[in-house]
Length: 157
Image (cartoon, rainbow, N blue to C red; front, side, top):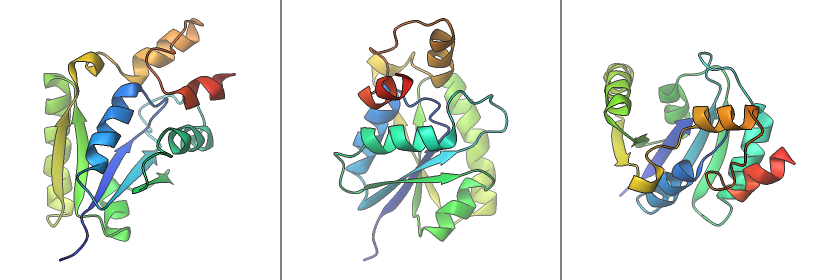
């Protein structure tokens, strides 16, 4: 039987405790889980991709089967094929996320029908967390330590 390899993608700008919770839960489902830090052309970046890679790598260091990768100009399905991924992993906080993700899933399956998508629902305590809200708080110099891993706090200093 072949390895189960997952890919969880996002901009992680910055990573939140909600992201970390999903990664920890997904890591138990796969032999190897890749965290793909992607550049989102629709969002204005707060941290560089290198900073995000460092923050995420430190935050997931305790998970032996998790690897962090980056991509600036590729579709997730192209990256998935290159790494032998069997399933894409996506998180859902609410109905709005579901609508967005189901639309994305349609195109992913058109482009790569061999890939399955697995959805993990956010834990209730993380449903309100988003990188967008964290960036807004950071812009106004608010304390975000209750919402992000320690690696994010260290990078901000």
